[in-house]
Image 1 (cartoon, one colour):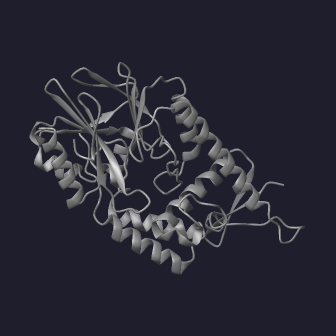
Image 2: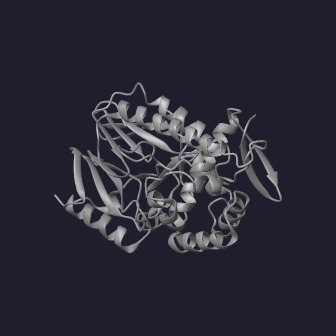
Image 3: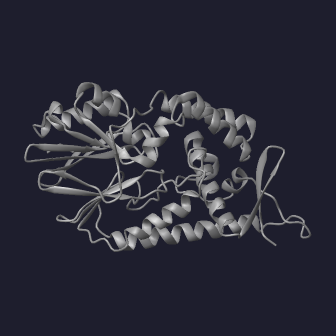
Length: 340
């Protein structure tokens, strides 16, 4: 079997596709094919190389693209939905499915190019990104993403719904936080959990506040983690890194990480150059003082810096909802401070 292809159990395959993001390098999509029925979980990035690897993987399995019945998009990020438009054109009868939480964003202008970057530019400015750095981040992200935007799905998935593919029954578990409509899929009989970006083996998914997710994404994410505490698994099938088995310890590790990150944000806010006045910091300033998995703040690059800003803002929003910090606006920008 090819190096980028792995059989999880008979009829369930992991396919590794390239992604033009240095911190990720690749994304895993999963083909389920059994008893004449088939389903693809995610599609990979919209690019010629990604498409070539996907097709060659299908060929290695003697799987005909035109026989593909369904495509499930785990969440609305370009390394997961990128090829859905091309595959839909090549297989017009294929059914595209995603959770309604993400499907609704396609129906608005949230994921159209011009309004998306206008709202992101304004949001980053409000959160303290300096004008020169702002232009650099927007330009680099626009160039990377290009026209990589989704088409509307055919069917909206719901919590608890089961997708049957031969002997497999994939139960939809709604796990918002990474996006509003992020889902996991659980095959109870084989104890397989497709975790998407919700749970990864050693890195934490980016949980970002943004114009498309302004309603406390970290709170949603922690609640979604809790939903998986009672699930028994033999294998966890993530979208990045590698397949793993220790789901419950990993959930506890991720929870500890976020508690530590919340404390880190509070420690930054505790700095007072004037002991008689509480310090005010923007989300950008706070992010620049934190440690990051990808390296020092100065080396993150435009893509990483945008992700770090969104993640920091999500932690600040959570702290604000817990009434541990205050938020105020001044001259079109948002600042935070510790509560007295």
